[in-house]
Structures are given as structure tokens and as C-alpha cells.
Length: 200
Image (cartoon, rainbow, N blue to C red):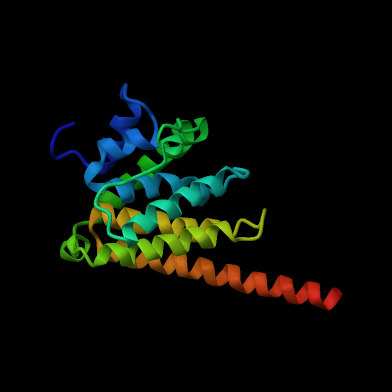
């Protein structure tokens, strides 16, 4: 890829290339942004308004593992061999990533580096890791078949995208979406508990 290629072009090139389509392969290609790129890919599927079954919980669990590494300040991404070598599913390769590339290109047209020093600061990585961890856990705890996991997952996707694009405006949008999604899950969850108690 040319040095001035956009992130969406790099991602599309990786998808069409001959290398292994695994999380490990993704991390090797996007080494500098490995944490954000991996989380972007993992949480994009839960963020889609599609029936994905229990596979999303695996993605959310791996996201938490990646985010914890950001919190503790790791500079390189580590994943268990089982996850690292696991091929990306057909849904991810055939539908999620191409759709993600189209969305990324829209963001790239309106985004620009705003606040790159914040993203470069070592102290910012744990904060971003905590945000991503919270959104992944929030998505995992959403009531089943409610569709409420979409908003926290989308918040994680936008925060990861902000890290890649180094744009604090996109970061603020992601935080708003994720926090709003978790607040909605808490509200609905409390309503369900209250309803059950009334029945009992």
C-alpha cells in the first residue's frame, strides 16, 4: 500500500490480500494501531442491527482482554494462540468488513487529526482502555434479544475509530453513544426487575 493510503484502503487491501484473515494477522499488519484496529473489528459485528447469536459475546470477551492490556500500558497486543489464530467468520469477512470500510470512508472524508497529542500521550491509553472495556461489558450485559447491545458496541467502534483517526471530536461522539447506550440498558434492566417483582 502507498504510504499515504487511508486506513479504509489499508483495511480493504488486507481483506483482499493473501495473508491469513485472523486477529493475529490483523495485529501484525496494523501494528501501530493494533489495539484500536482489533477492537474496531471485534465490536463492529455486535454494533450491527443483525441477528448474530452468541458469537457476539466471544467478540466482547476478546475486546475486554484487549482493553485490559491498554489499561495496564502494554505497547504490543497479546492474544491467546487460540484467539490469535482463529479465522474470521464468514459474516465478518463477507459482510461486516466491507460495510465497515464504507462507513470508515465516510468518516475519513469529514474527520481530520484533532488532538493528536492526546492520543499520543501515554496516560491517555489507560483511560481509553477503560472506556472500551466499559462499553464491551455493557454490550455483553444487555438483555438478550433486546437489541440494546447495539449502542454500547457502536460507542466502542466509534472510540476505536477516533483513536485510529486521532480525532477528539469523533471520540466525544463515541463516548456519548456508548454512555447513552449503557444508561438505556440500566434503565430497561431496572424496569424489567421492577416488573418481575410486581408479579411476584
